[in-house]
Each structure stands twice: as C-alpha cells, then as structure tokens.
Amino acid sequence: MDYGTVSTQTFVLLGIGAALFFVAPVVIAIIWKKKKKEPFTTILIGAATFMVFVIVEKIIQSFFIMDSTPIGAFINARPLLWAFTVGFFPGIFEETGRLVAFKTLLKRRTQRETAVSYGIGHGGLAEVSIIMTYTMISYIAYGVLINTGMFNEIIEQARELAPNQLSQIEGIGTQLTEFSFITLLIMIFERVFAVFFHIGASIIVFYACKDKKFWLYPLAVVIHGLIDTMGGIALAKIVEIPDLAFEGMFAAAALATFLGAYFLLYRKDKAKMLPEEAIKQTAL
Image (cartoon, rainbow, N blue to C red):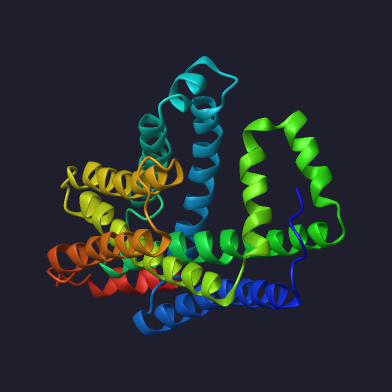
C-alpha cells in the first residue's frame, strides 16, 4: 500500500504536540503544588500507580482479545462484547489502582486536595506527559519510515508475525498522511477532558476510602468502563459515530464526571486537617 509522503508540516505539528503534551501537565502539577502546598509525591504516586496498573491490565487483557486464544476468538467474533471488554478493563484496573493507592501509600493524606493531586499525576503526568509524548515521538519515527519507504516492510513483517496488530499499524500510516492542525487540536481537546475525567474519578475513589463509602468505588469503575466502552463501540464501528460527535460525547461524559465529583463530594468537604498533620504531609 502506498501511504504517500509525510509532509514537513506534519513533522512540525507532531513536534509541537510532543513538546506541549510533555510540558503542560508538568507546569500544571508545579502550579498546583505551590498554590495548595501539596506534597509532590502525591502527584508522582498517581503517575506511578497508573503506569503499574495499566501494564498489568494490558498483559491480562491480551489473553482476552487475542485471536490465538479460544476466549479471544470468542470475544472478537462479537463486536459488542469486544467493546465492553476493552472498555471495562481500563475501568476495573485504573480505578482499582486508585483504590490501592488511597488505601496504602496515601492513607494518611486525608485533605481533599490529595484527590486532585493524584488525578493530576494519573491523568496528567502519566497519561499525557509520558504516554502522549511517547505517541507523538513514535509517530515522528513512523513518518520517517514512511518517507524512506521502510514502512511497507514493517507492514509485511506484521502480516506474518503479528497479524492482530496489522490493522493498528496500517491505521497509523493512514493517520500520519492525513495528519493536520485540526487533528492536533482534537487530540489536545480530548486530553484536556480526559484529565478532567481522571481528576473526577480520583475524587470519587478518594471519598470511597476517606468517608468509607465503598459503593463509590464500583460507581467509578462503571462510569469509567461505560465511557471507554463508548470508545470501543466507535472503534468496532457497531454504530457509525462521526469523530466530532464522538469527541463531543466524550467531553460531555468526562465533564459530567468531574462536575458531579466536585460539587457532590469535593466542595462539600470543608474539614481541614489538624495543623500537625498538615506540617507532616507538607514535609513528605
């Protein structure tokens, strides 16, 4: 397949995207830390917990969606079941990661700002600064391969060695040759609302632990799972959803999660820590 040539403009946009995705969450994290006198370790714990649980999630999920396994073949033959599988795996593992972090490493940090700090680390530092920056750099590398004619060799190797990943790799080639300023804006728009969602979900699970309202944890799992299932339905083309309409639906769901968590849980929590607790946490 001829993917054409990746333009200089595309490489510039990818470079801008990589820089922006890396720098913006770091700046936000620093500003939040200084303004709220929050321990930066809370933000780092949020990022580290996300990375650990996502790695475990991907390893386990692969057994459920690979065609080479009986259960994978069964799920892949049923698009709706596949959409629920790829949707609820992140919901279960990421929300469980939050629960574990708040129950262990962060159990002594009970001020409400802890929830936001964790969300900035989870959705900002990890998912944007690390994963999205890596994605942009990977796209630049793929663009070089396309322009040097080596991308088709990768396609042929994938066809023989990793047929399950073939459509994904081919999709990257198509994305790059069609990449534009609007594409970058949509990616930024999506990540902004994703961070809002992750902060909202972090608030929900934080209060599941702090206020011993355990039902909030499965609520976070269900909300997360349904939002990601919506993405799975779009990817599987079970329902044809225009890209802009899908982004609008995702933004609405993410913002609703954040606002619900903020007004129903975070804003109502006016209790402050004892002075000695505040000094201890700031020092950590």
